[in-house]
Image (cartoon, rainbow over all chains, first blue to last red; front, side, top):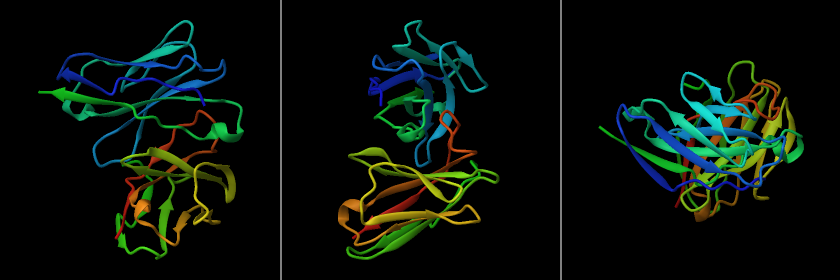
Length: 113
Length: 114
């Protein structure tokens, strides 16, 4: 599994954009980059995933570096409900043990009112 | 609501005992995953089933076993429980269990071993 490096914690203010970085320098060419988040006392929740191009959905945007060694999850306007641990997870596409998602320690995002 | 149902929500038991955790996947999902979350180890993948068959195995102890039944619900059996088995156990499901599918997680079972 590709190793990831994320800040332990980040802080943001409500209504402001948040950029959550992730380094995954050992990612292979076929690994997708997934982002999940875990709100307090809940199970993880899918946020977004992508391979090479930037991706957008109703929750967030994912910006992937051209060399794919890093990515950034962008929350365009943080709300109090976005306070959670955010996990960046490279996942292989070739089957076998790559079916599993390997969660690291993630980034704890605090949103101030 | 993710559509994944886990029961019970809380379980308190003693060392040496055996417990069964139950998971009902989202309607139509064929694949089930089990994860363990403890304070010191984070979220650890245990095992994955697809349509009744084991598909991938992670850091699952020999004292733990799981199965997926014909109606696609899954059970995780934990035996000879130790204090260190106290954790949150999550079940997740996905459509066909292929890489890059979204996983939908349940709200977990909190196991306390005293």
